[in-house]
Length: 482
Image (cartoon, rainbow, N blue to C red; front, side, top):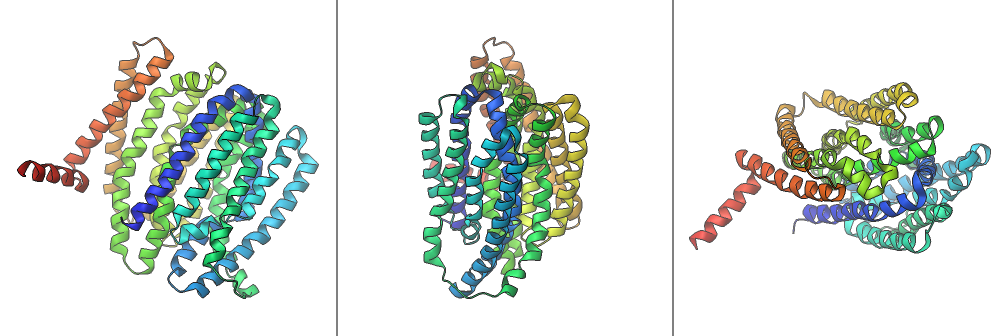
C-alpha cells in the first residue's frame, strides 16, 4: 500500500478516535459537571493553551517541514536539525512554564486550583516532539501511543469522576495522560537520532522562521481561546460551558480534515523539495474535490440535527447549544477550504507571509466582533465572532494565491458540494418535522441525511467523471463480462 495512503489511514483513524472518545465522555461530563464545571475547565484549558502557544511557537509546522526536507540527508544531519530545534523549544518552554506559574499565583482568582492542574499539560507541551515523526511520516508511532493513552483517560474518567467535586481530578486525568503520551514518544525517537554537537548559531538560525509561522498561530489563538476567556470574564462560567460544548461538537469533524492536512503537508513539502510540483498539484486537486464533499456533509449535517442533538446528547441544561451549533456549523466548510490551501500550498511553498497576514487580519476581525457582540449576546456573540474570523482567514488565503492556483475550478467544486449540503438540509428538516420525539427525530435525521448526501455525492462525482467512480464502473463491467 502507498505510504501516503497508510499515513492517511493511521492519522485519520486517530482523529476519528479523537472524535469518538469525546462523543462518549461528553454526555457523562455534561451531566456530572454541569455547565459551570465545564466552563471552569474550559477557562483553565484556554489560558494554559495560550502559554502553550508561546512555548511551541511555530515548531509544529516549521519543525515538520524542516525535518521532511532533511530526512533524506542522513542520520547526522537529521539529528543536528532536530536538536537545534528542540533546544529552542525547551528554552521557550522553561520560560513559558515559569511565567504561567507566576501568573496563576498573582491573578488566578476562583480558577487558581484548576489552572495549577494545567501545569502537567504544559509539561507535555515542553516534551512534545510529534513534529519530528510528522516530518519523517511515521504516523503509526504517534497514533498507536495516542490511542492507548486516550483509552486509559476515558476509563479513568468513568471510574473516578463521579460528581462536580471531582473537577480537579478530571483536569489531572486529561493533563497527566497527555504528558505520559508525549514522554512515550521519546523512546523510539532516541533510537533514530544521535546526540550531535550543535552551536548557538545553529539554534538561533531557527528563531526567525519559527516566529514567522508563530505569528499566525498567535493571531489564530484569538479565535481559538480568546472567545472563551472573554466569555469567562464578561459573561459567566455557565454561558462559557454552553459555548465550550457547542464549539467542541462543531470542531470535532474538523479533526479529520486536520489529519489529512497533517499528512499531506510533509508529503507535499518533500515533493516540492524534489522539484515534483506536478504531483503536488495533483494531490491538491484530489483534496479539493473529496474534502469539499466531506466538509459539506458534516457542516449541513450538524446544522440539520443540532437542536435535537443538544437535548438528547447533552441534556436539557444544554438545549441552547443547538442554536450555537447551527450558527457555527458553517466554519466546517470555510475552515476546511482554508486548511487545504494552507497545508498543501502556503506552508510547503514557504509562503508564510500570506499565511501570517490572513490570520492576523482574522484575529482583528474576531476581536472586534467579540467586543461588539459578546456583551450583548453572550455565547451567540462569541459564535458570530468565530464565524467572522474563519471567513476572514479563507478570504486572506484566497486573495494571497488567486494568481497562482486554479481557484475558479476549486470554487466550483465547493459550490457544488455546498448545494448538495443545502438540499440534504432542506429534505431532512422537512422529513423529520412530523416526528414529535427528539430522540427518534435525531436518529431518523442522521440516517436520512447520510443516505441523501451519499446519493447526491455519487451523482456529482459521476457527472464530473471522477476517476474513482470510473474505476468502480470499469470493475463492474469487467466482472459482468467474465
